[in-house]
Length: 183
Image (cartoon, rainbow, N blue to C red; front, side, top):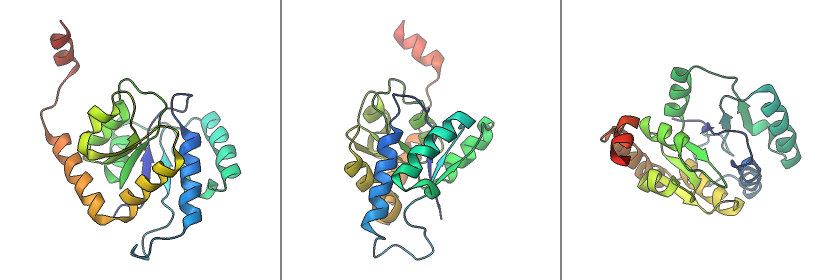
């Protein structure tokens, strides 16, 4: 079974890592769900993919301040194939943002059949559809609740994972398709 959540977003002002960290701290504070198997770690670990040394330093300082530094794992820049394997092996991809026009990390997660927990802003609701648990931006309580459901509630996870697999195996549009439709 999956043992981590994955974050492949950027590390800039549009992406809301502060809410991600606060939600993780709230998950740690409420305690382990009763029905969660003992073999599954609690709270969920989050793998931050393609972090630069500067990103790692800034996030580590913020995570330490929130008391969740040990729950984050970082990868350096990885080839696309390795990122795809990490995303495919995750329980869910997390994508908390203040704004997002293209939803590329969510598209990548769905292409791998991985469900998402994301902010309900920009293109994300349309892209994620039923394959995601969507919450208002900058709401750590709702983000924590959605992450808990994706991590610890097998029924919820099965539903969004089935939807993610269906969206990932559906008709794949290319940038050529987009250009043709725009013209």
